[in-house]
Amino acid sequence: MTRTPSPARPGARARVRKALLCAALLAVTVQTAAVPAFAQGPGPDRRSDCVRTARPLGGEAAQVLAITRKAKADLRLKSVELKVTRGGHEVLTDALGESMTGVPARPDMHFRAGSVVFSYVGTALLQLVQEGRVRLDDTVERWLPTLPKANRITLRMLATNTTGLHDYVTDPAFLAELEAHPFRAWTPNQLLAYPYSHSFWYEPGTNWSYSHANYLLLIQALEKITGTRIDRFLRERVTGPLGLHETRNNFTPNIPRPVLHAFTSERGLYEESTFWNPSWTTAPGAVITTQVCDLARSAQGIGSGRLLSRRSYRTLINPGTVGLGHPTARCPATVCLPQTEAKHFGLGVIVINGWVLQNPSFSGYAAIQAYLPSDRLAIAVNATKTKDTPDGNMAEVVARRIAAALAPQAPLAVG
Image 1 (tube, one colour):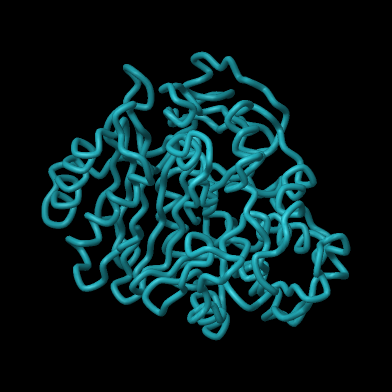
Image 2: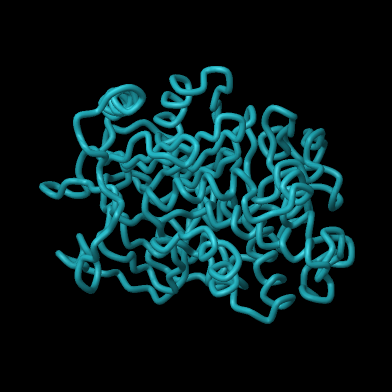
């Protein structure tokens, strides 16, 4: 997502904005005073096959672990969970550091996955296109009659961030409210009121700018098109077929146990943020949690186009965004970013030097799922912060270092 400076407390709010969807979930504003159920969540611990790679390590596994250990120290991270596979075979699964003081991080611990869900939404939309149920260039007025310019906005524009709608996540008024009330439960109408209060950056389809509003609206349209709630639709179409059994929507701020706890300094003090309400991140039903083994399966399944035809996969990774993105008198260079062959937004995914990825970061959680089709290489990383961790998505930095060692010909240059 874009990083537009905000007038008040720019450092803190820039970190809040990082929600690349960022983003995650909806519900009742429970401030879960969550104590030891805080480390685990309700219910007994379930057996998991997401465990550390057996020792001793050699070859690429030892190399990746050494890189990760050094990155954790360099970046002063509280924890790092990772899984790397090549050709579908495990290179390394591990977890370093602590979830909380005295509670070691484990690979099977769950965390918020934010914008990873957009890759599922984009894939599911293309499945409907394959089946002839909709066309990408259908305008959306029949499903979203209250959306301004709905008769000129298409499903493709919503999915590729080319509508011209402002991003509420960069709106100073929204940021002030979110910072003051991190446990607040948001409704879609409350969120959409922010972009609707601004004029469009540009005429729909003529430029590119990231906006969480686009996917909130696309999800609403998909629910009307299919007559199915989005959590059920994505489970039937994407997470179920990919075997992502630990990836699920939550309608409350709860996280299934075992839980990887998050901490952040976004509000000016270092505090726990695990159970902050994620309802602002996207539409209800699409606010997901996962664990790192599912994240690696997700990277491979989405990045390889396993659920799509070859034609649809080509659309996923370049739906017409390349060449868009340029500042105008109304849209600054910090918002209308250039979309190039080497680095562009696809249809719910980001493409960088051949890597297909998503990189959520918000409320103390930072992750990345990345897949390089040419090498059949999947990298999944989740990281949490200490009070001394630098700003930004540090999971990206860890993944970039791993990619440089395993696929030096294709830099994972996210930033």
